[in-house]
Image (cartoon, rainbow, N blue to C red; front, side, top):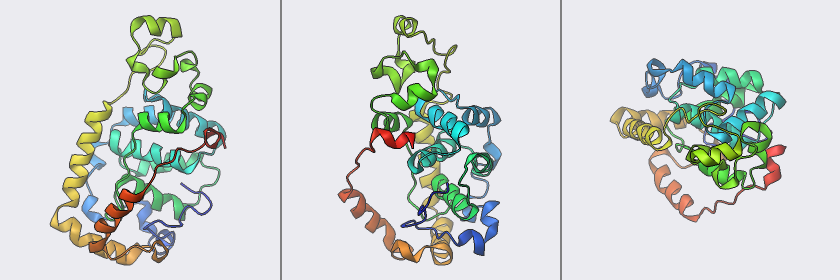
Length: 256
């Protein structure tokens, strides 16, 4: 996930990979072992790598990355979140694929971020992005999607984030038949997110996960993040979320 300054303010120190290089191969929080490994869907992984998931913002980002070697941080995070939660893929194979695409690949940042965005550090907030909302917020005019997913070039803007909602007549006029010219979503957004939340939050409520969280924070937590000890973090995070204002990035940010 390497970007200049990407470590600033994060809960996992960028030095973690240097002091514990095994995080490239195993979960920060060992309570996560076995969480996704046995459920790896190779067809879903291939669709994600090719930018053929049926979710326009995910596919546009992946195709742009493969063509240019660069993507802004929010969209990098969204790609990993989608792979981890919607597709329930273990972070290792997606991490290797992304590492081979990034011109600015730096392992100390990359593997820490892969685990943070997939929820296996055991201490960070679970970052689950809606690909539809990200399309609407980050690409409100549809410029980025139309550029990198030309199959959708003539799709009316109200349908661009969710082209599967077009009826047959709109698909005809747009010259884009879902399932033929552009894939239908490979997973159901709401069902996939609910299943991921149930499993992740269920795991985090276990005694083993709570016990391990403090140890992970002590060994790998970034002092620059200003995070309080593990037991106090949830209250602080809740207060922070209540004050936060989500301001969409300018359209040009997506184009670098």
